[in-house]
Amino acid sequence: MNYSIVSSLISYNKIDTGTSKRFNCPICEGINSLSVTNFGDCIKFNCFKASCNVKGVIKNELSNKSFKIIDNLPNIKNSTDKIVLNKEDTKYWRTAMFPADLDRYITNNNCSYAYKSGLADIRYDYQKNRAVFVIKNSRNEVLDATGRALYTDALPKWYRYGRSRLPYVCGTKHSRHAVVVEDCASATAISHLVTGVALLGTHLTEEAEKVLSSKFDRVSVALDKDATMKSLSLIKQLKWSIANLNIIILERDLKNEDKGNLKGVLKLND
Image 1 (spheres, rainbow, N blue to C red):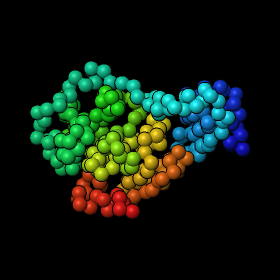
Image 2: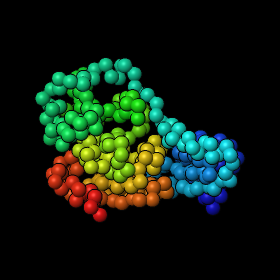
Image 3: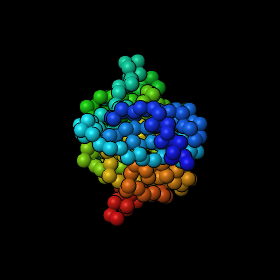
């Protein structure tokens, strides 16, 4: 029943091949929560409201035009690849001469290797006194960033500089295994083994799902025991677009894990 209702909505509203549109969900009535993408050979739809389980695929007949656009599908996947920061956002960032607090934070959270090897772009916001984890695209352009407070009792602990809704991604270009983690430091700490992905929020955004489904063959959700329900919710949302999924229940935060234990914890020998 739900499938036919959504299918009728999609049929009524023309969606050109290679484009995405957002609608109010006809099932849960979520405002602008139903995402629909026409890939040419099929149309995928899903509602991003946590309480709604509407998802599906509608098969299309392929035309010559469809094949041409399918060859350029990275343009769909990178539709959020826009620079959203301006000079006001970044003018207090420093790339060198870090204070002792930031050096200590990088070391204590096992981010040193990724920072020194260039896997992670970490900067210092001397106005807000934050460790800045930079979000970039494949052209090395800064799209967004999130900053971790270096003050003990500072709120918010994490500060989002832009409004891109993109996840923080840290890893080598050749890695096809993504591990979804709690925060940027954990993503950075495991980036020499896999690609760490921090969602930077409590829910899976459409932008994050597109990154995970388009760039990786395997996705692991690695959160601590207290977040088991969140892990299960993420798996439920991702299973429609990613075939190889698994959950890793952590005994301790990955950024605090001994390096020698990481492969076993991440089940890389399985």
